[in-house]
Image (cartoon, rainbow, N blue to C red):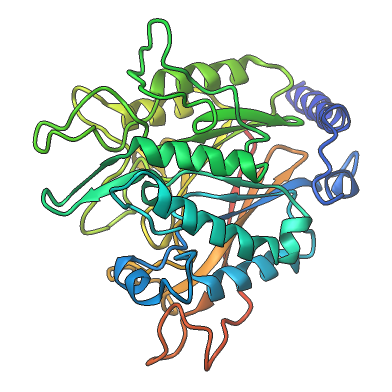
Length: 393
């Protein structure tokens, strides 16, 4: 009897997947329905994630005339080419923040210039014409650095510049349903967050996008600056619970720039999603994901490395860190075989399982710098690690 129930439930989900894909029209690069196989367990949807590609302040100061984007162009170019060369091109590309350097204390002009240069490069790449891009805000996009206080804080003009850039380049397609500073405003918002933290469906998949440095009305008592690492947790909790309750939702996937927990055995943590006695946002986000079984994965970056572990001492969802897109890598990161740059691909299967694939390439040989394309060009990335996340039921 137990076996029959499992088979019946699996059949219902296979039917729901097909109906969801057909009704939503999610074809990406024409791969979703081509990969669908009724009665089997094929991958029917996949997406790629790149995080943290900016070259850092000192390199930016040295190279801004030749590289106005402030991005690690050689590594980004190769990652985009690698994604285009996968056996099945993903249906979407997410950039989990820190596309560019910024952190300027200005009216948004530095960010706008960097983003426009970044977009000019991205438009020249084949992948930009094949699949949609969903960029997330990172701290380097929307905060400023105060050298006197040696502290960061959200910068209102940067949010406005970021939103304008999203709209100008049609990257606001999936946003719009996020929180607003209206009514009771339990998340203490200052700005319209509807294009920064938001959610959307692709067939039976529900994506939650989080701005992990949201403008808010609180201040850091040590610096007097707006509190860093803020997220609109009340809105996020409500959105996840609603998606969980929908019979048509098979899986919920959450993406943020900042992480909930640092990597295991990491010597220190910095600037993660705020988690204090007054504002336990990291703990609340971890809890709501654990309590809603359809949440399958939390993808973030911020740390310049690749790492994956289950939250809450192994009792929560997987947190996968994708911060090795091209920024200067963490000195304490010591993976087997040496550090590497790359990207992550996630495949979703009819059974509900997820396969997370970590692709990487070695750094340029010394004395060549990490952001240089010569004399040795970045090689194609190879598969470094695979994680299988079982179905929710």
